[in-house]
Image 1 (spheres, rainbow, N blue to C red):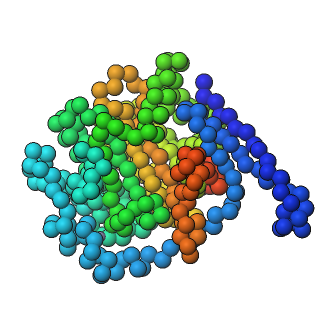
Image 2: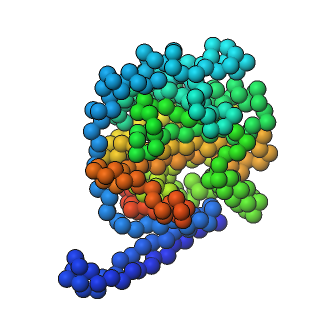
Image 3: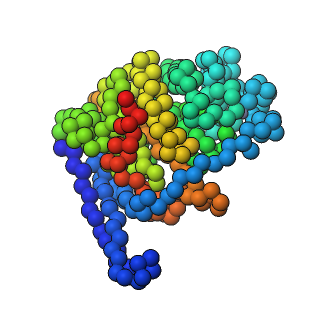
Length: 344
Ligand SMILES: [Zn+2]
């Protein structure tokens, strides 16, 4: 049973915008149906997204200092030791997998997605993204054979500066680890509990329930179900794609990658229409060696923004950092209606 619980609380103020009349302002608190963790919806419509001017990020000078640009890639980027990859890197089309010079873990690698230094959302094409995801998955499989004791494979993407991306040149992170992070752990443990209690895979159930409720279900491409989650982790909301039949990295087919990319390209068109030009993304696979199929591949895509273009305040503040409480100004059911227009 998947429950979508929420509660509205009201704050009463004497409002200067209404001649100091009494005004009641609502906050909605929602409970994540899997983890039981809270998130809130407030400040509706308070963030006006404004596009940044990219021109200063793509000059001969910035390209000269970028290690991922074609003129520097051979001399400035690190290579893998020969026992991992004899060539020192893995190349697929424009995409190249290299080790991170500042690693986060034993295997902390990057996929440089393009030869181009700055790729605006609408300039990503199918081949570029398919090659980048395929290169990452191929690297995961290669390391899995060499290091069978490392079960977790996580692909993340910080796109553009509001997301925390330190380099404009587009790149994915590839982490192979025994420590997949707290969100993964909570999600995994609760997927296991759900399976033990109900005998069902939570992710397959979620797709079924969301599809029948028609409030947050965007549509299906191949084996991927696109959903706006009931609780968003980002200020501007969140978008998920769930592949209930895909568990580990070894279950993902080339057709699945093409379908994932097809959905992303539609999402990027929608983002661009709203002025969104930055996001965080994560692909979460079931651990290799998992006995039961209670955890399915799902991706989270979370748009990011500066709160205004002048001071460039981060959209992450003490609510998220100190209270660890997600907060969103967007109503998921409304986002679903907006995105549906781009899903035809
Ligand atoms: Zn570059």
